[in-house]
Length: 216
Image (cartoon, rainbow, N blue to C red; front, side, top):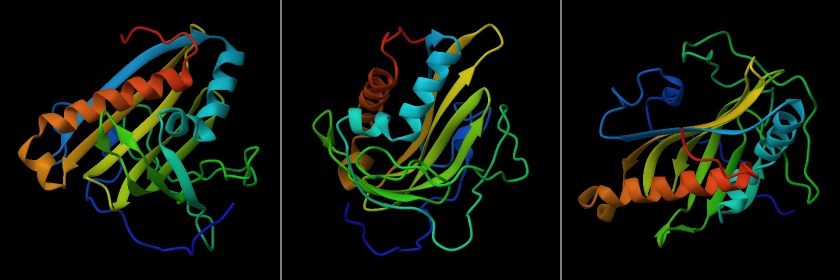
């Protein structure tokens, strides 16, 4: 797989990690539109493990119709990323203990600090951009990561993807996001941002859940 040179740009928004804030929907970052959905996608360890493998190998993005390219793991010492507990409180950074993994076509799995370029269209609207993995979590009953925009996107913000295997054996998939319009069309017609986000959520669910459960 071809890889470009590493470009150590920072994300283009200030509220890094805000997708994990408990009050995201009530108090989103300035000028941004928040969104969050949770779905039960099955139960049991096998379901959790298979969904986790799919999530960390970029299945949500690819199956959503987005082209994944130029995947660049963090260079130099391991970047530990921002880390939060289940209620959105910042905690000491964690780092993935496992060695870098790759899927069948050689694409690196999600890891903190990885930069990736996405291209595609969602509901007829452009969904291109360069994004950075803000944090990644791999715990016995919780797996997920967040992507933040770096450059070239029509919106600025963050989206997180979390899988939780609960004590009652249910497996839940949660996507949270906030988008601040950047392109002129999106700033004038903010409803397009919401439409784009709704379509993305639907595609992510279809990608991760074989049941395609009804939103809670």
